[in-house]
Image 1 (cartoon, helix red, strand yellow):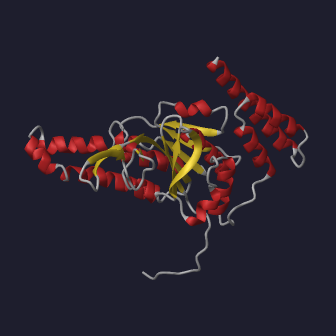
Image 2 (image 1 turned 90 degrees about the vertical axis):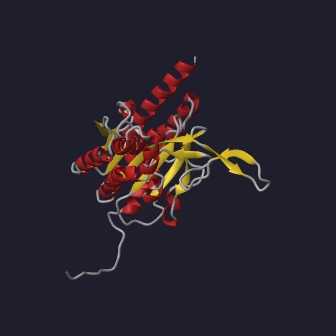
Image 3 (image 1 turned 60 degrees about the vertical axis):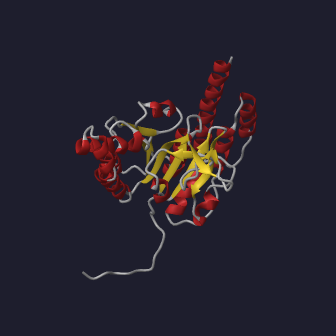
Length: 314
């Protein structure tokens, strides 16, 4: 078979983005903001393993929803993602990908089942078979990853993260407890996934509850750094720029005026601050009627959310 070589160009590059974090870190909301920016006016797809929790954002984003239920095997994840890719969505969000590793029927469960099959309750034999019991589960995970790398839509994978510690011996020969040091973790927080998965993605980030939506890079290559400014939350504009880069555009991309105003609306954290943005928006120039209508709708939804938050606190 003859091979053909042509000058390389960056066009229609499929992206795999990983967002890891604890409860309250904003990973689901951030994933949807990023997906909305990438997909533009078209709906994106959410594969939900969290009992429909993604639907909490149905009044804020335009997306199609699909439940993925146990068993959370790698093959079922691959099947769901392949089915979504066949529907020609520009973006597929998977929330949460951690179930593939640690959920009911995930890789850890599969390894335990293999160990039971190979050694039963013979604990000496179980120790001898421990390495071999990983072969089938890890092969299933590998098959899933190979399929993920072949799909055309952009993938945004959400992972739960948990804090971990370890005992280490100091130079003085004593033992001390410290935050666990791993290639895929930061500040002791480690994504719940196969240990190398975050490094197989285009870019992956850790989100922390004290600064929701602000990414701490786990893997971020030089060509993508301008798309994710330090100490700034990931927003729809991040998705707009990422989509343009993947399609072959330059970096960074100038975000349009509507996206700039949308960012102001979404970044408002109090009703007073949002009202101030609304007053400015009334006299804004350069926005057509459709953009203004879209921004007014986003303003109304955001104000409702802030009012609900205020009533809960009261």
